[in-house]
Structures are given as C-alpha cells and as structure tokens.
Image 1 (tube, rainbow, N blue to C red):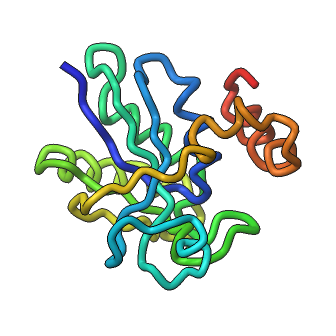
Image 2: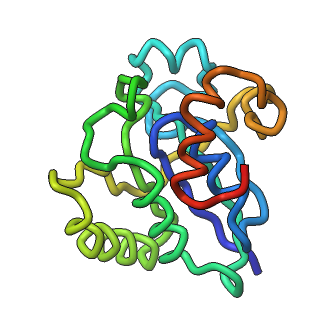
Amino acid sequence: MTEFAILGGGCFWCTEAVYLRIPGILSVTSGYAGGSNPHPTYKEICTGTTGHAEVIKIEFDPEVISYSKVLEIFWNSHDPTTLNRQGNDVGTQYRSVIFYLNEKQKELAVESKRKHAYLFPDPIVTEISAAPEFYPAEEYHQNYLTLNPQNPYCHYVIFPKLKKLGLKL
C-alpha cells in the first residue's frame, strides 16, 4: 500500500526534480495548496495573493522509503529558514511547508523539524499544517525538468541543487 506526502520547498519544479530521483518515490505531482480560492491557476499563484503555496504531492512506497526519510530529503533540499522565499523566488507561494495527512505524519513532521534544527544557523520557519485541498498544477508544470532541460532556470537553479544532493542530472 502506498502513502502520500504534500511538501512545499519553494519552486515546485525544483522539489519535483529532487523527489523524482529518489528510490521508493512512485510519482510526484506539482500543484497548489493552502490558499482560499478553489482551482487556482499558475497566473493567480504568481500574484502571491491567493494564499496557496507551490507544493508537490508525493506518492511513495513506505517499504522502500519512510515518511521520515522523505522529510530528511525535504530539509536538505531547500532552506527552511527563509520566510516566503527560496533564492530569487520570493512570495508566500514559495514558503516552506509540510502539509500532514494524518496525526502520525504530524508527529513525525514536528519531530523531524526539531531534529534538523541544528543543521541551520537560523530558526526554521517551515509551516506544519493539516493538509488542505490539493490542486494539481497545469500539465506543463508536471515533470518539468525532464521536458524542459534547456530552460535557463533548470541550468541555474535545478541542476546545481541536484548536484549538491548527489542526485543524477
């Protein structure tokens, strides 16, 4: 039986690219969650006024990778100490967030945040909240790196992130 996780660590193109390279991850869907308006569009998200964050919904095999390991990768793949920002991506839509799907995930997320706090010189500002409605992003955002490897954003942001994490480009 598979499990799911919903995480936001800045641009969903980046987080999707990371998790698609992890054994035990079965699928990754880029999308939006945490705001008030239903079925938001990318254009609306980019205004920073919807309350939604760019997130990914991960389907994983818990016999291959645990939720705790999924979270460990999350902490190592972005800067959870910058409020509403990842690099040059600025706005509430780029906030660091863990949307838990059950009480066990909540407990593990809180413990993981505490456990990883020592890795960072500044306090972690990652939001940990109950999962709201998840809205898949438009099709052209799915599997972005694979379909758009020539995009300058991929070269300047995603490729260095994958290299830092020791993941295959």
